[in-house]
Length: 68
Image (cartoon, rainbow, N blue to C red):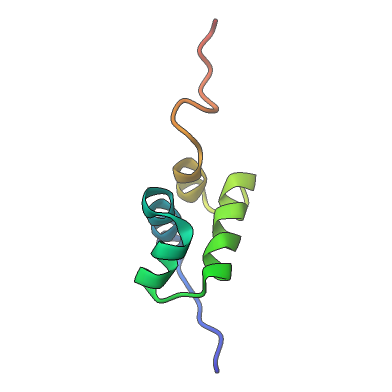
């Protein structure tokens, strides 16, 4: 089977979907291997995906200075 290539936008959207509904359910809905999606989630948390995916993976308010 040929290896499939995914755009950065697709990966970012997949990470966002996984955040909403859970990784396994998102992988099933997108018809991609769960391991692939979990790799993207991990990379997003580590900042190794494009900025949009990283922002999706971060909880609200994290990384924003409050100046307190």
